[in-house]
Length: 364
Image (cartoon, rainbow, N blue to C red; front, side):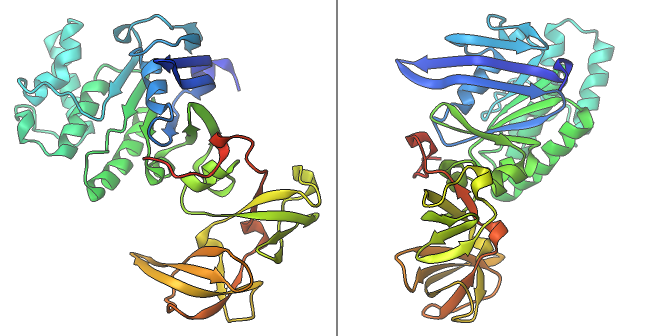
């Protein structure tokens, strides 16, 4: 990758509050025209990272570069970066026109240009004709779009978004996810988005950065993050997972819950015969078969209907594991079934080396 493609570069960034680390030795680069999401539970350091990039916080150590220039001490208003906060911070005493035009007026842009830019932004966020409306007359989704228009009218190279959809209802939130992604692609600027919502991150992002306790746990495409988690924390945080103790019994053979499964991980991936490992199996990847026709058997002990599929908890017959299954077909509580998992759907991981990598209950 050429350096000119990198617009934001964080090198060895550390930040603490009252002696507690918020961000630890962060090394991260962000490319131009990329939609990148910082994802993780509350207190993981994602908002602190965003605030450092925006200039609202300064790092204790390390360097922040924008287009290859060090900007550690550059104040927010002198960075080609704008921010949309969770609380939109619109000016209640101004109508929509003046809210959007505010930054341009501060820069003493001429009135003709301001008029043209405000109309352009209103068209972009699908609010044409709303110029003279009062802020209080708008819905939450409309206010969110005005906040984005106010940020974009200044033509930033980077737009920071700190959980801007959190206050919206589910349907509007989903609609705005698609609108934001479309907007980013049309404008061709870099979006850096903060959320604790896994679905939101997977839906919109080119790149997802999963954080926990101030550290980056994994960085990759949504597909890589979901299908190839690097540790138990990522596997547990991104979607639903069965994470169980297992042991490599041969090359590409793993023992799980007393049964031997074929897998695609082995010596080439750094796993040794006899090594204790974690096996990750997504609930939708466990196939339900007739009793005795799978690799293992179990009894359904609970069932829930979750919109488009059924979610079942299955007690294994020979072991002590309760398996979470997701299936489009309905099966009854008390039914005994066979279960089969294809080799490519078993993800083998090394045991966690720290608490940061462990699957855990997290406050989101």
